[in-house]
Image 1 (cartoon, rainbow over the protein chains, first blue to last red):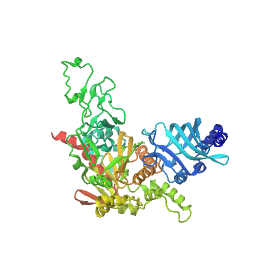
Image 2 (cartoon, helix red, strand yellow; image 1 turned 60 degrees about the vertical axis):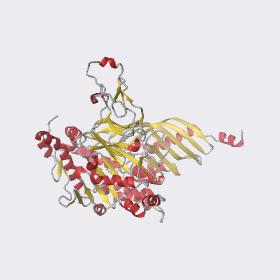
Image 3 (cartoon, rainbow over the protein chains, first blue to last red; image 1 turned 90 degrees about the vertical axis):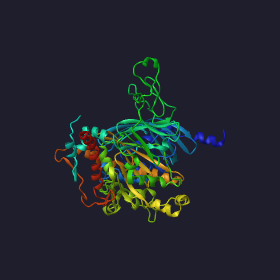
Image 4 (cartoon, rainbow over the protein chains, first blue to last red; image 1 turned 30 degrees about the vertical axis):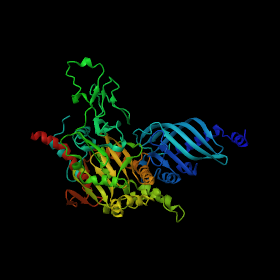
Length: 167
Length: 440
């Protein structure tokens, strides 16, 4: 084993540690605390929700979301804004995350996949969103930062109503 | 059905107001599907979605399931997606390439133009009146199919004038969108957004040229963007997102100056030379590519046209300067799917497409901070129009102030002229065939 490979193995992240990070992230969304939530992202961090399965380019094809920190910040200010007609209705979510797996670890970036079920209350109606998360996580001190959170809804290419909060 | 007499329908539309039943009565919706969506030219898709022989794409024209195909000879067909035998939907995949179509139920097969190719164990049909050549046994063609600059429309009535007549001056929007490509051609980029609205289709169409709502309904996102920008260090350049979001909060005066123009058949547009898209920054290499193709004078002329939203009543709206179109697919009196499609300008830098996509994500997406506020307002109308307190919806702003010239009408941008024009067309469609029948 080379020294580098040994180091990589030695520093391999603990999946339970990652799970806790994902639960805490989901908790911020369930509380609607978008300001604290966006701080989990790196400065170049992205939140991406493709509009079709296997989409590989967020810039030359439409997505439901492809937010950088700037848009996350505007969204945090817009969320619950008293001048928004849609935001007059409460938006509530309940996330359940499972099947968390470390797909890849190169010594710096962890690629993590997980399944999610989110029950969302939007405009008086309860909706189920389900699919797969793919995270790129980078070490930040003892914790993690998100470089990308990709959200593949199982129905991303079907007609649907609003999505008023990050899932 | 049959509850609505021609007099009753006429009484629903006045000069300055329209009766709420046009938005909430399912019987009116069924009549619209027959008389408006069954008579007008309805947008189907773009030719670039089916570039090769055998390519197909399924969608709906009004309530009708249809398939757009490209035949072996390159011709575009639009056929009803219904098996001539027992009525099953033949093609279920959204798009693909095929030699022909086979109904999965009893195996009747069809050519790309919808004509019958074969039926299993055909001898059983001997002496029954069955005839392979009879269109009754085909996936039938819609009465008229034509395209303009690659935009394919179909019409279910033989009596409607041809597509060019129908489009009239609205065609200039499609010309401009295509001319903005250095090669003069557009190409669909990726899958569409499909956004389900809990509202009548007409509310959505009206809103496209409603210049009194952005500064109210969309004020929160403008405020959020301004508050974000205010906390940036002084001298930080505004990001591209800002130049897209901020104009939605423009003043009444700005929208008034943009102006609104209406055309026959219910069509219309805002802007012309200036719109909320005029001040977009230049994308490197694009103007140079345009000059190389068209010469400087013509390139500048093309880029000077800037219509905000052109409505091709009832099914289609286009933004020439943004290269995005939206397609109206009514489902029920209170349910409408809006598709948003995006176009690559052939020969232009890829950054042009990236801006189109960014625009649409910020404004049109189900997850945007603009579309949902419109959505909510439409749903509020759908909910509260049941109120017995007042039966009318008002559209009198600017009444009598319009100028008429060459079949067009023009007024200040926040006038309700566009709504009044749409309801003139609505009334024509909804009463004309009845009048024709009664006159016969």
